[in-house]
Image 1 (tube, rainbow, N blue to C red):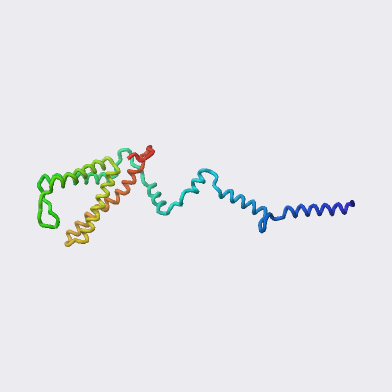
Image 2: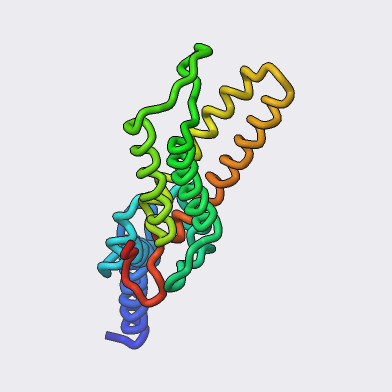
Length: 211
């Protein structure tokens, strides 16, 4: 074989090798695309337990994000600390309990229904609410969640009753006095919301709520 023929044979071999290297693996694809697709699929599939747990968690709503941000701004109660609104609620509860008993012992009469008849209430009508307010007051002095929650529920009931009375008010004095009661109850109700959230939070150094 002459040198010219050898050169021709070598050129054909090089062309065959280059054609085999440049041949696409599939219609409309290239080796680079295949490698990129494999790399993307590998990156898209979570492999670690943390990635699997994050992929399984449902998306967090915007309202839940706002609630979480509001909770992060609250400070947990220190040992022996009591929010001011809880102290005010405890004092009010104890004063209400004492006023109920004192008024009953003094012989104060109350109106019966929508009639003009007045009579002294019985002991069964006086002592249950007095005991309720007393227990709630001492519970709030100890920053107990159930006591603050009960006080908040009573403020909500007072707000509803004051609002209904305000609508049916027949005089300016009655409207102003009812509005004052409504404003005080609404203020106490509003501040007890944050107080309840702080009471639920664990104290510094504690692993859980513990209250």
